[in-house]
Image (cartoon, rainbow over all chains, first blue to last red; front, top):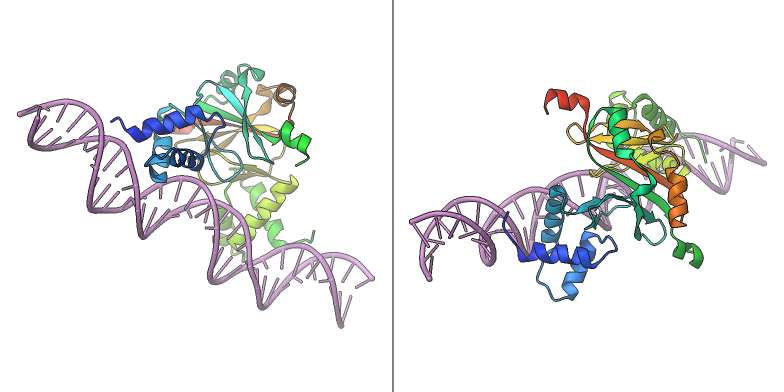
Length: 127
Length: 127
DNA sequence: GGAAAATTGAAAGTAATTTTCATTTTAGTA
DNA sequence: TACTAAAATGAAAATTACTTTCAATTTTCC
């Protein structure tokens, strides 16, 4: 795999924006930073990196995908009001992967846990 | 809410096809059974029923949504080879919802656990 | 039986993402 | 350093899953 300036910028933007941004969000961030980059390249690289396991793709029940540079095992919470994606530590479900493997007998490569609800801020603001 | 023949057929098709079908799959099933129904109506009713909690929407990392008539708490496994969706009992992660609520302090309405990997059949067939 | 409210379906529309393909960049080799 | 093959980019077109619109039909209630 060849190096590319764009891919590096995309990864950095992911790191610098801990809000689990979407492809479009990264595009806007990079555009504001005067970067010459296309949305196509962003989609392409996010997918490639996700496939390689360098980043993680998060798909909630909404239309668009979010991405996470943190590949350590952890869960997510998506607020149905503001759409923000929060981290939830995976320690709340010990051994879930091991148990699922044992239970199904399948080869399990990864798993996702996504909680849906209303975050504290939206709750307080009564959104 | 008014009764509709179509909604009943859609729900029955969901019940009869325990494979967690997509909207299109249900459309094909009903079409083959000589049913006069449109894809629009299927999407509409699946969404309505999911909103009411009568059925459940499953969104994996693939593009299309799947639906489940079983609303009892359980998890899913999606095979990356054949695309089939399998059930995984939720008892493997006891108290996960309670713990997540406690940990985040958020209002959590629902949550999804999706495992990704290769199912036994695809493993054996070497797909 | 009639009217209001809900549902349907065909067609058009939308939004996110992917594909295509000509151009440019990268990285190894002469 | 030049050369070349493989990989990456970006603009535009295409795709796909799904939603909206709206006139016609169906359901429910009085």
